[in-house]
Length: 452
Image (cartoon, rainbow, N blue to C red; front, side, top):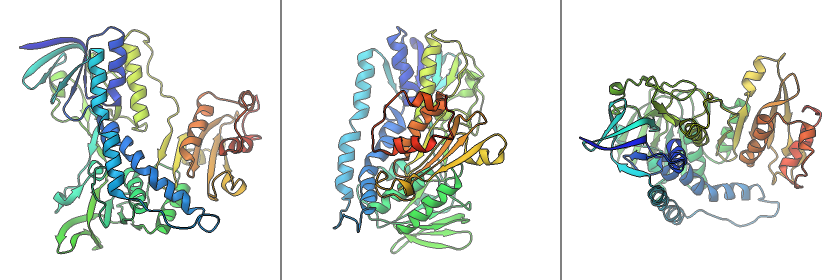
């Protein structure tokens, strides 16, 4: 029996969906959101928000240490229990606030698991809901190694909710999540080990800067083991022991499997709706349509090569809103997408990668800006702070990699220059604050960036 009909149903309530849901409801559409977990999704509840809140004190401690011996004395420590209590107080209410916003706007929130019965109908708790258009934004979840002792493995969500910090934490994998949490845990006082199957960390980022990050983390006391495949986790009288195929053994208190994430496509009944998918996610065209034209997909659940990030999901969600409200018929075109790794120190990149530029020296010019060495007082005593910039044949900035504590803010500024093909003449239309790293970078861009 049909429970209710809508113009649009969203499966999932994270950033990939809720921006469009709000905009389309405000445009007069009847809208429902189906959610089986926490309203507002991973980033809001147990991802980006919680991570950056917990990272704050760790970042401060990291920067304080740069001034040891040149003005800072004494010891400052993180009280993990107190910090976690602050996190719970700050983050936990958000999903209630978001649901309140949806209710106020007249968006129906349907709690439960959604499953397609055909291309227009989704079943939740044995009730059927019809919609002209349906948007799938179910995201991804942490992968889990299928090894003996997998019951002892934890994921990122578990870590971000730890009431007490374990004495020793072992991270399996050396990707973004692993290294961000490893840096945080070490600053908070835990002993940390990272075990990685490959021969390097943070694949896809500029290797010069990823090596610097690893070296910095090693100097902070974090142990790294590369070219090691974890084969087993066993419980011992003192805690846990992680073993690799090469017979490396690591005694530890807590193990986090950070070996990747997989799309939430199972049990959605996609085959009932004629929606094609593969192990990388749901297949879409340049309008985010699936193989069933009235069904769309957004966010991390899509099979795509561009960075799976919250801002990317939000960008796609806003596009869906414009498309379904009739404000555009154009295909989706992605702008430059900035990526940041919140290690200590940070790294970031946007646009043409240094690796790709190095392969085509006739097409691109690469310039390294060592502003940490030349503007030490502006970088808060961070001598290794650096930007590597890529220019095309017309001298437009087309890509950058950034190393340093201010990498998130610098890459955002540089993204604007890339996205709008700004010249020196364009930048001279504004007067920037001084002294700052931003204006320092601008000064160093002169001579390489197109004049006008």
